[in-house]
Length: 565
Ligand code: FES
Image (cartoon, rainbow, N blue to C red; front, side, top):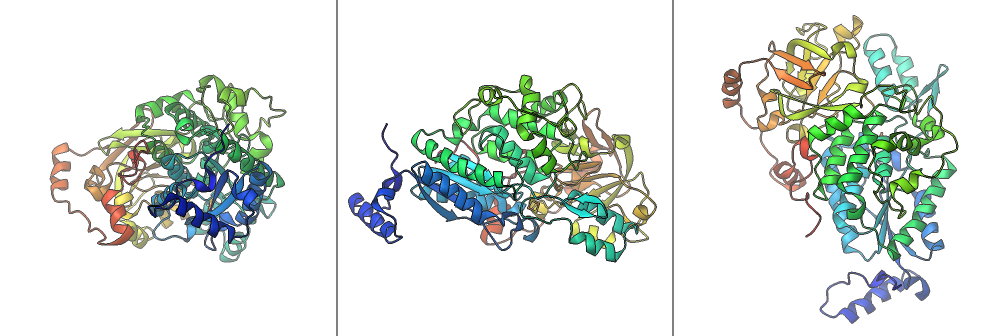
């Protein structure tokens, strides 16, 4: 077997290949690396540490563990930085920068001499960006996630970011928790390194990555501070050297069949709505598109099996101890495509044929005794969302599944924050709250779809209302919430035409969301609609001119495709 090109791969263009090789080796030797190691297969390690990313705090020790594995298996590890996206430290929202990070990852994998790459990330947008970049670069790649946080304690109960953040904030808004207690809770929600402790977006994406086959089996849910996480990193380093010598490319792993498997896992996790966007964007990088009708089919066939917040009770530490992704995939096995290959070179059925010693059935239910018979997420369509909207039925209030109500409209995020708690706001408990202009073009699609219950209703004990927007929602949030409405208001979708007082009907049974206004009147209103201004320079301009709508994953339109340049 011939060795991969290693450091001689992708030489710098001087018009003299031998000179380029000689110069590169000279500079590499200046890093104090022996000739013996310089002759080895090169494994890049894409790292994203940042003082603005708490979820990546363990990056140094993970990097060391991956490098140890690469060296042990006979490769040469080379770390390289990319940008880092700390979810709560970015304005206007991390979603705007996911595509930018994916470009960074793709171009640095392509431009630098590596035979395989290990991608280390964790926070919400990081893993999608790394997978998108790797899918486009199509060089052998393996994902290592930073892993979830452990829970904190408060007055005898466990707390985990960020479902409990929202639960306590809602209590504070309703006057059930005072300032002193909310300050105390603030310090008890996120007490270790790692990603949010529930089945939010980061955890969902970690699980999806394992189901896709882009990370080693059994690694998605290991807590960030568990020693096994370092072992997983070391094993991933070794696996990357095997991939360098016997390449299996992302294009062989991310296929229509593995993407369907990943969507099926998403449904059974009751996972984050954001994962639909991210998985769509990752698949889009390989030219794969799963139609919404197929997504609904998968959802209707797939039970929710995992009892974790925000849908259930447990935390990621419980999921790991219960058997993790492997336990769920074994339950779903009759519904999965068995022939999908993973980074370890085995098919899914080969991976799942290994016995799993024990499964905690309180956390991972058997197929025949699910938490819910149908999957956690569905796609709605109708006159308010001709191109679709997402609804997380697993985290919603069943009593609100068939609702017709009066719209209370907020024109944009600023309008929402100015008026939502106004004591004079004309709103009652069975109204439907509508937020416009928070989609990918309107505001970068922030996680603003979890509109707060108006203060006067919250104080009166209202816990949930139907809420509709073109925004996203945190994977850790819950409620009867319609998201990702497409086309969005800022491109003149029907959402732009809604006015306070209009009637809206949500039917989960029929998977519909309709604006009960005469079509002619909707068109008259839209004829008066004026497009919002666009940024005139920089990444903001590129983003606004090319970002796609939610059904295409909000990627930049020129990045989608089969990855060929
Ligand atoms: Fe990074 Fe929640 S803030 S995963």
